Image 1 (cartoon, rainbow, N blue to C red):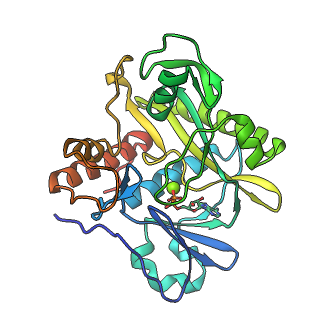
Image 2 (image 1 turned 45 degrees about the vertical axis):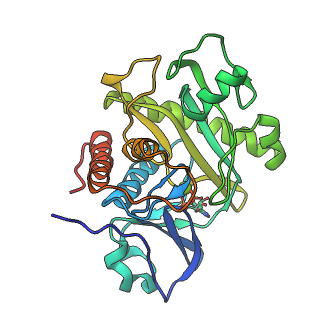
Length: 298
Ligand SMILES: Nc1ncnc2c1ncn2[C@@H]1O[C@H](COP(=O)(O)OP(=O)(O)O)[C@@H](O)[C@H]1O
Ligand SMILES: [Mg+2]
């Protein structure tokens, strides 16, 4: 069966609020409607083809974690049940079912709240160059993918589409936010990581690192955006984990590896993705959903 990926939405009767790399966001009264398309970005460039089921997987995984973490911090989720959406959404139900979430509109705190339990990606790069990540000095001699003594909070800037996020120090993050907000999101991020990484381990998955976003509603800080999805986290299969090298991961690795293999210059326009890369990536997304939640999406 060939399944069509959804790349764009068009809901003329709803007010478009923003289009992100992956999500189309509509404003409905005091709420936002987050619609996860099947778009995929790699090296911050959005590919021309979509990944079937990706938008659904992102939405369902976020929903799962919002429920699982609401005792730590409240979040923006109102419902994913289209029947409970405001009436003006209902004529778009076919595109909304399974891939959308009605959320409270928040004033987003403009830093990316990254927690790392293992050293990888840009953290590994920074550590190799400076011995530190986001101004946090780490012990000498760490190997790639090694588990850290304790998880660290390494905020980054929230780049505009096309730009790359940059790790920043606590002082820089406090400058962008304020001390009280910074302390609150740091504590929440670490507490969230602790709970979810422990759960994931019982399912055979290491959450190496992850990115949270927070927002304010009437002065209260809540968890927003997507949470603990393959797009916002590094998930590694526990049984294949070994420090001293990069790990296989449950996400866009096939896409990234393919792009590297053809020497993609990381600038638009992107090259077309071969059919088997699209199919394998779709399977990876479905697989992680099943591993984490024990349920099948299709
Ligand atoms: N509850 C919320 N209120 C306002 N903005 C939100 C909320 N949740 C998420 N957002 C914003 O919506 C956007 C999500 O779309 P996405 O495609 O992930 O964008 P990006 O390309 O910035 O990652 C992000 O910019 C995020 O900050
Ligand atoms: Mg995003």
